[in-house]
Length: 237
Image 1 (cartoon, rainbow, N blue to C red):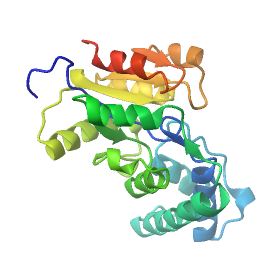
Image 2 (image 1 turned 90 degrees about the vertical axis):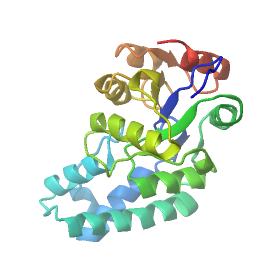
Image 3 (image 1 turned 60 degrees about the horizontal axis):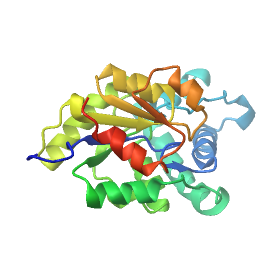
Image 4 (image 1 turned 180 degrees about the vertical axis):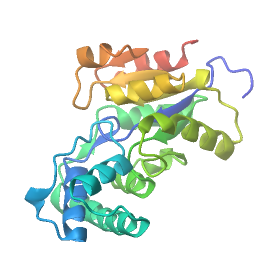
């Protein structure tokens, strides 16, 4: 990685609530897809908590609650329908979604003015992740990552994301030089599970105080605090 004035970091970004807000498209698409795929009335579906969840974990919950056999064929059918519904909801129904404050500027600066490498650590299955990123015009910032189809437990995704980023970019980031950036306590726990640094942002369902209670390395109101966030990323651990 060479001798950099600013130490190079691997930055693993969460998507929903951290980079963007789909305006409810994701939740609506998941429930509609499950209802349609298995002919289940919407009012029979359980409530689902998507904050920091993985798509595989949500699917597991839905299959169990509705007593549907979770075969590979059924899972594939559900996710295929979900991807179609997600695109439809983003384009035609939940059109009030948007990038969150500061995201465009921060990603551009990281890409063009720092030695850092961006990747994803998200509960979205890979195809859904890139549907969302492409819809809001930031997919070009990310080439690899770990996704909700890799494991239902978010805490298992850190090592997957790091290995893929290292292999893809022919680099050798350690977890000490890895920063997970997310908006939920589960992102903080995920970072702790692999000894990565963590930056929490209060742009989702959790306040600064609520996130601070889980002892992240840094917590910010939003990614629009560009200079402070870049400084936090580049600090020696």
